[in-house]
Image 1 (cartoon, one colour):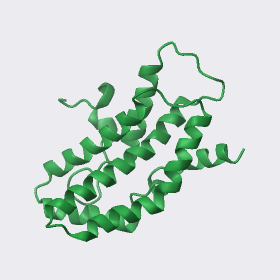
Image 2 (cartoon, rainbow, N blue to C red):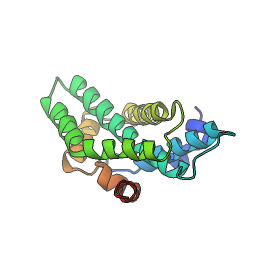
Image 3 (cartoon, rainbow, N blue to C red):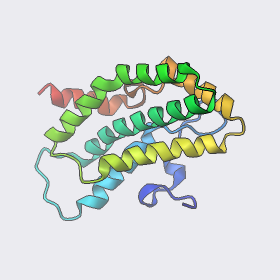
Image 4 (cartoon, rainbow, N blue to C red):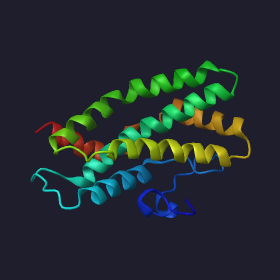
Length: 176
C-alpha cells in the first residue's frame, strides 16, 4: 500500500498506539477513521434519515474492528506458540467482556439508519490486516505475542477502554 491506509488515509494518521512491543499495535482510532471514511466515501448521494450520524456509525463499526484484531491475533499466536491455550482463553474472555458493547453498537447502528454495504467488513478486514502487519514487522514474534496477550488479559484492549467516547454516545442513544 506504500504508506497509504484504507481509502487513501495515511498510516501516520491511522497508526496505532505503541504498547511497549516496539511495533505499533492496532488501536481503534485508526479503525474509527477507516470505518468513517468508508461511510463517507460510500454514501455519495444517498439520502440519510435525520437521526443518521455517519461519524458515530463509523466509530461503532470500529468496535467490530477491535473484535477482529483480538480474534486474529489470539488465534495466530495460539497457533504459532505451540497451541498455548492462554491465547484462546484470553480471546474468549475478551469476547465475554465486550459482547454487550458489540451488540449495543449493532442496535445503535440500526437505530441510526444502518451502515453502508461493506462498511463492517472493511473495519474488520482493516483491523485484521493491520495487526498482522505489526506482527510480521516484529523482530521477536514470541515477545510480540506475549505482550499482546498481556494487553488482552489486562483489559487494555477492551472497547470501554479504547473507545470510551463513542461507547458513551451509543449508551445515551440506546437509553432514549
